[in-house]
Length: 503
Image (tube, rainbow, N blue to C red):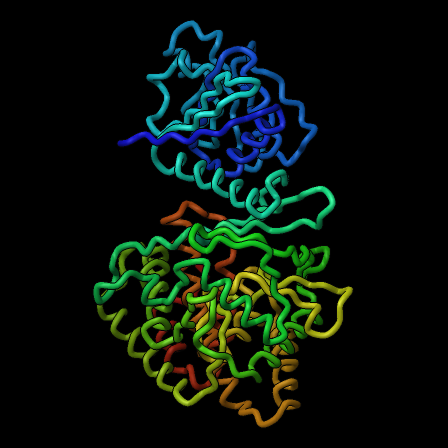
């Protein structure tokens, strides 16, 4: 495996600390960063900045572990700071609990040459050497940890090009995809959001020679976000201003719309805010949206359709992941055949129904409440790069059956009523057709989510999504109560798909 090298000139202690901050933002559990350099080279400055960034505590006491040999910190990603200077022999690293530390977090190792043969081949080496009045930092390594470190350094370069090179970076939020977000702060300016959206890795073919993401029409680059952001803004929707962009690398510097959401102090959904979001959807669904959107001069994003293949492969996540998890065996051919038959009959019923720009994940994590504003401007919308042209009912179902919040039947009804009242007020509206489409889309979405949340646990090592499964099953039962879905409801009941199961 080839080792790669990046170099950064550090003219003072501030730049050394900034490098530590940048490396901290790239860390994942299991990573090893090795700090190499003479006494006084700046290793302690870099280590201190890295740990304080992970802790989001600029004043955190970070003593040198010279005498204790290892110091552990319960930060966003637990980090274990090793100093091997006093190590008697390389094998003693095992006695320090090095492997156990990597199983639960990341390791920061000073004087790695004392145990070099015992460090993983994927270790990222940061070597600090004297150069003039400053230091030259050489960052080298191979594999995913080095690639993440290199991308984080590229993000700093992007900030420098935007005039924000001295900004403080802090982790903001990640999601179920490879995207991540940071809050960046610069004296004299309002905070902004740094979006890191690497190009989508498509994965292996799963059907008809195509990867899942191609069939489901998942956005493959940040250009989709840029194009849809501009279209939504032109349509009167409050979305982030894009202050700087590098679409080729997948970096955006965005307006920070705020952090207030849709939940009360005890985590309860605030019905009036859900109703306001439903009214925003009603406004959007009354507009005509172009399918071809400009991402930048000469580059366009064609909004894909939420076609039958996309609907079906999403619904199939239930039989691909959820069924094996609850039954202990792969779904049988008979189950798959019956499942597809029921769903295709429902997809037939969507023909001729209202289709529009469908944001796909229109729910509380992606809607910011701005109570100091009025009308639709109270709602700031984010995370819409996977938008499709699909049934208008889909986003209403995404909102009224919020996957991460327990929405009571009463609040679901209030949300639906607010949407339908706004549509009736704007003109002719097929309420019966909408309610049937709503039930179909709610059943499709919640079936998909059951599969996704199990996949996140089984494939991606994210077990905390499983706690949402009882809520999703309840939403699915509600959707299946519509008379048009009787056949699918009977099928789910016959195969025990709606039973409460502990995974």
